[in-house]
Every structure is written in structure tokens, then in C-alpha cells.
Image 1: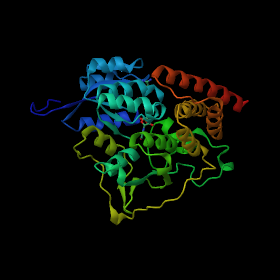
Image 2 (image 1 turned 90 degrees about the horizontal axis):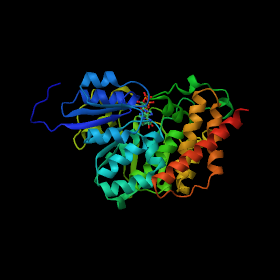
Image 3 (image 1 turned 60 degrees about the vertical axis):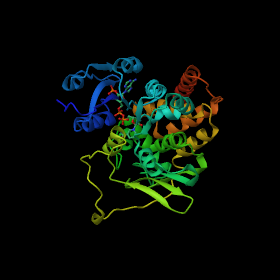
Image 4 (image 1 turned 90 degrees about the vertical axis):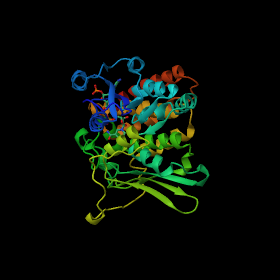
Length: 368
Ligand SMILES: NC(=O)c1ccc[n+]([C@@H]2O[C@H](COP(=O)([O-])OP(=O)(O)OC[C@H]3O[C@@H](n4cnc5c(N)ncnc54)[C@H](OP(=O)(O)O)[C@@H]3O)[C@@H](O)[C@H]2O)c1
């Protein structure tokens, strides 16, 4: 598309371009003359067609994404890679002060302290794309931290909300992938069914908003219309509402500090909004409580939690592990490591690899 020469166009590297977030980001970018794709990356699926359609010079499948970023020199990195594999790109952007639109929560969970130190040195923007964190960013923007009492992350509860542990013994991959409110990639959809996703988000929120864990609450809100709430010491609570559609937080991050229009409908209050809240069932969904404990323990425990969960979810999706085994693998792995802090990326990568080995063994043992 030819663009008016007076426009200052933001050049965006879309990492994870073939995924759920990546494809929605391309839709947002294509509809906005102030945004342009300068690089595309995926893990295994070809990005050749996507690059050709948009005349994008820099494209890469797998490999070291920092090589691609060095070549493309983007203004914004949209990190929508799934899993720990997204970490080098997160650190690349933060270290250089390049705006990071972060969907890849696993990198911040695993390497929160390294990432925040890199942001401090780089001095750039870290804009959350996760809908709850985008909502909180907006609720908290411009407020003094002294005025904030606590924050609340909402969880849909996933497809198994209301079930007992016994009722989850035989659930299948297809059952777990049938999310009631969000359409997402397979890993995060399973994480939503186990509530590990909310556990990862809890740790993500701790690092993003610099709040201790006892001031971050999780509530179940089945319709996913309220994305998050910030509570203030004066008794007020500010909530962020909208229909569950990731194009809104993606567009917010890509067009910040502006707020471009999207095709998403505004809320219709005459159509009967259901805003119910309930506490999460931590016994049936232990991965949320395990994440809180891993986060509070600090060091490399969050990294280990994430690594073990990635291994266990992959095993469940491959039919090698029952649904309830996912939490079993994570709990066992957390108990098997020392969680010592990682002062640098090499030590952290080693902790991630060690946790994966433990988790693979634990998954194998649970099946036999
Ligand atoms: N989907 C949502 O609504 C949503 C909401 C909030 C946060 N998030 C977060 O956003 C991230 C992406 O989620 P998603 O649902 O979009 O996942 P997805 O649909 O599974 O897409 C993942 C993307 O990452 C790419 N990828 C995987 N490994 C890679 C590697 N080593 N190098 C480069 N690219 C790699 C995949 O490429 P291939 O196609 O080649 O495999 C794909 O493009 C996750 O961290 C998730 O937690 C997602």
C-alpha cells in the first residue's frame, strides 16, 4: 500500500506471525496507514506468502530471532511467540529501548528480573498485550503507586469451571481446547483450562506493575467482559471493560499513546451484560496456587514453573499425559530444583533446561 509521505510510520516486527495473536496483529496493521510490518517470524510454518503479500524484506522461520531483529531495526517488536523461545527477542527489545509489545508472557515470567534490568538500561516502553495487563496498564497509567491498594485479574474459569477434580480425570484434548470465551493458540488454551494461564499472568503482573503477590488477586468472571480492576486506597475501584477480543489490546499496544479505532463493537449495555464474580477453585485447579507459591519464592522458581508447564502441556496435547498430570508434573518439578536466582541469561537458560529434564522424567513416570 502506498502511504502519504507526511505520515510517521511505525515499523513493526511481528514475531509469531502465523499464530493467533500474530494474525490478528497483521489485521490491525493492514488497516492502519501509520503502521507497517518490517519483519515476520514463525517457528516452523512458512512466512514466505505473508512476507510477499506485504513486500516485507525480513522474514525468518525458526532460528535466532535477534539476528532478524538486528537486520530489520524495528520501531516496535510485537513478541507473539509462544513459550520460553520468545525470551531472546524480549531481551533484545528491552536492552535497546525499542518499544516491546509483549504477548509472550512466558519470557517475563521466566526472566522477570533480567527483563526489568534490561528495560532500566534500555529506557524503552514495555506495553503488555495480554488483555488483563493491557487493562491494568490503562487503569493505573498516570496514578501514583502510593494510591494503589491492589489489583484484580479476572479469569474466565475456562471450559472446566464448576467441575470437581474427579470429573477432570478423563477429559480429552478436544475438551480442553473448547474455550468458552477466547479463541487462542493451543498452549494458552490448555493453560486457561488448568488456570496455569492465570498463574503465569499473576507473575507477569507482579513484574509489570511492581506489586507484591498479596496485593494481586484473581477472581473468576465467566463472561470475560471485565478484564481487570485496580483498587485504590480511597475506596474506589477502576475497571476496564470490553468484549473479549484480542484486537483491542493488540491495537492499543501498537498505536500507543494514541488509541486507534478497531472493528470491535463497543459494549452494548441494553443487551444484558452478565457481570458475575466468584473465587477460583484452587483445589481443582492447583496450578494457580502453585504459580503464586513459585512467584513468592522468587529466584528461578517462576522459570521452573513455566518450563515444567510447557513440557507438561506439550505432553498432554500429544496424548502422553492425562489432564490432571499437568499439575502433577509442575508440582514435582518445583519440588526437585533449588530455585537459586539466575544472575544472567546463561544461568537462567540452564535452569530452564534442567527443569525441562525433570518435567520430562516426571511426565514419563506419571504415565507408566
Ligand atoms: N491467543 C491469545 O488470545 C493470547 C492472549 C494473551 C496472550 N497470548 C500469548 O501470546 C503468545 C502467542 O499465543 P498464540 O495464542 O498466538 O499462540 P499460537 O497461535 O500457538 O502462535 C504461536 C506463534 O509462535 C510461533 N513460534 C513458536 N515457536 C517459535 C520460535 N521458536 N521462533 C519463532 N516463532 C515461534 C509460531 O510459529 P508456527 O506457526 O511456525 O508454529 C506461531 O506463529 C503466547 O505467549 C500466549 O500466552 C495469547
